[in-house]
Image 1 (cartoon, rainbow, N blue to C red):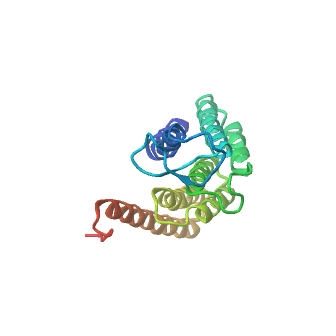
Image 2 (image 1 turned 90 degrees about the vertical axis):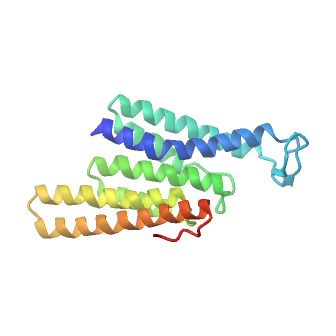
Image 3 (image 1 turned 180 degrees about the vertical axis):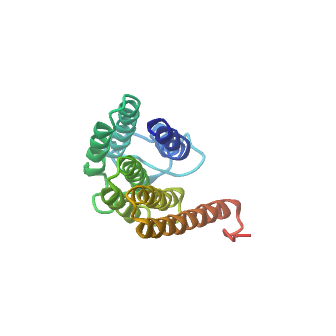
Length: 206
């Protein structure tokens, strides 16, 4: 289970998180020395970019370190400690306070999705569900991150169904499976809309 879980995270989540962090590495290289977060034109860049402040860069660096540490703890079969590391990151005061910038929201939403995966793998379905809901409050727009969280809602219900089935609670297991199917269908719809918008067709499903 642990290897499959790590593989799922590496395939679906890590590239998106890495993209967010790489984008900020680029922006950091394209800023001047002014301690501002306003929009400014960088002489060496082809277009205006926002000057990234130190707190934002520090937060993103901390997030990268936390996820890497969680990777190592998972590989060492220490999932509870991985959860603690990611819980700490999720609870860390973030730049922007109650209104963090989109990139911070994406990192925190990704963290919540990973926490939901870890907790549901250990049978803590209620806490995993709370992680999903907290993540959805951050990933409010139609993005990969919102789709990932809805997918995790399906994973939680799929795992809940299996646990209920093993306990002989067949009707409850069937209900959980139906919720899983509905969540997976919703996740596919979100990702199709993301793809459609990127390709310019408005996300219309064929």
